[in-house]
Length: 512
Ligand SMILES: Nc1ncnc2c1ncn2[C@@H]1O[C@H](COP(=O)(O)OP(=O)(O)OP(=O)(O)O)[C@@H](O)[C@H]1O
Image (cartoon, rainbow, N blue to C red):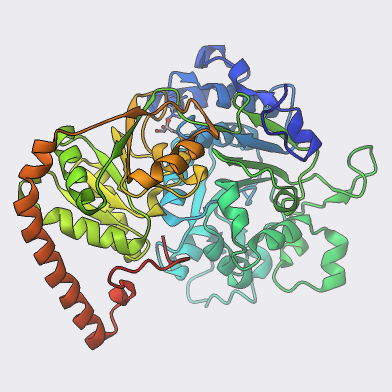
């Protein structure tokens, strides 16, 4: 199969096309553990999606996890279960509990979401799933991840004395890079020496940032073998002196020469997987197999309806209000270009008293606990409109999001793909609206050409509805001005975090 823009790497030019697979009922999935089948049914899953079948074939099927997998599949196509299911099935016959699978994601909310999926299927085959994201204190996290020996009453526990007895309390760990590095560096008994599976979800985002060199560290630690332990005198991985060892030898067979064996299997995924050889080289992939959907590099969900709305610069907020009124309380995510615009737009919208929907802000500027609460309310339908920076762009799966609105046009096709992918998920329908000023139209059309399924219809609002909003807009703007000023003075007084909001200015490279 020939791709439209030929990737540089030869193995990327010969992909497995996921569109050749058809959704299949669980009964027809070969070798699926009956316990997992029941767990999936409890999740209301009765069939596997094409990408899940394609990955199943390369892992549990004839492919047998022999190659590392690079998966490029549209938003909402079910990538999480595509990797979770084969990993859980493979580990279901493990005899001893140790950390065998590690899934790394860029944000805490995403990691929580993925952990939920593992937690729905892993316990039925006796596997435990842990989370390392900094949601709880490090001490609580350690006690969830590492089992301490049971001591007789009155004896004090000292980890130094009982190092060899420390064992992993989890088989699968879902982590963000920062917290993962904390455990690698400081948690006694936390070891990656038995790791068999590494999943890097949202790969292109994960490779963009070094996050304390988490990737080379993970690769190095999971490569270590008996000899190197002695050579480097590693002080933390003493468990090799205990009864359990995963000794990785250097392979001599063709294709495995000089590679540790058993090797660490890697699965990397995104809806916009990078094709940059230097970035992919960081993953040290073994005979990688590329799985992609169709011929185009970027693909929008099949049942997404896209609309563009040309608006006057000065009246843009009114077009948004008019649009929201027409959507009558349906769940919406409104994307802006920065944390500052998110805050201001959300504040402004809340001054339009008669919108009759609950509108909240979600951005990297807020404390994690505020964000998590907002997300919960949005999931539960208590909040209908979320005004968000690009913190919400990737991976987030919220049921019932019917509309995505690009209040600010995204600068890149990748951002567009991930934003609009918050709707029309799992084969459902969804709509996306992009508000454009006239001068942005050309650039927008050019950007869309890079994606498959890119038709975008004009949408307009009656000018009378915009005019009727003018009086309330003027008073809302006044209130916004007062709010911004009072926040600025609070900031001067208390050195508040909101200090980063600069009137009218966008800060490049700011938090998302
Ligand atoms: N086989 C299935 N049958 C029905 N629903 C499914 C199935 N697999 C996944 N889903 C649902 O589809 C939705 C999207 O799945 P998931 O979040 O894994 O998508 P994704 O491909 O990772 O998307 P993104 O690229 O946006 O992260 C989820 O709500 C999930 O529960």
